[in-house]
Amino acid sequence: METEKKIIGRCPLCGGNVVKTCKGYRCEHNIGEQPTCVLNINGIIGNRKMNDDEIAGLLANRSILLDGFVTKEGKSFPTVLELADDGAVNMQSVIGKCPHCGGDIRVGSRAFNCSNYANQAAPCSFAIWRNIGGHQLTLAEAKEICGKQITSAELEMYREDGSIYRKRLGLSPDKLQIVKI
Ligand SMILES: [Zn+2]
Ligand SMILES: [Zn+2]
Image (cartoon, rainbow, N blue to C red; front, side, top):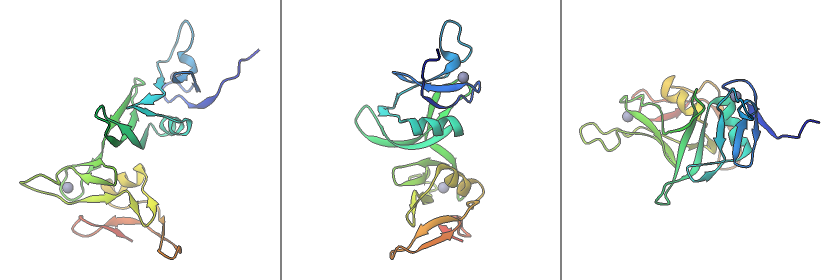
């Protein structure tokens, strides 16, 4: 008789099922005497408990932007988790290059910020708010603004009276401001 297992998603390394275990999430081919896969994701990453939907997103997209990680000093921070080819889950706070100055764009609690904001020789104020018009920007959308200078899709946003409008987000000519197009 088959034992019942909770399948969370597909293993990006070998294509097998990833199942929920007592300690986290493990590829079905990384179970038993002769495992053929190495995927094993801890249920707690960066002092933060992971939920099933977040792991499913990480498996499907190989990366996921999440808030609520906690440093040893107790400070909360957001980061992008990336699933590497060797099955390791790495934190990556850099999501792209600044379209204005070429510096690194890092994810912060409220915005994606240029790492040159405090560079005394060449300060850069470029930032993308993570919430624009009530729309919570996804990692993919922020990467599109940095890389292609515009989102590929129109995003649903909201006015103060609750009415909905849809615009793409792009860059001003000086590539410093985010504009609705
Ligand atoms: Zn696998
Ligand atoms: Zn910059």
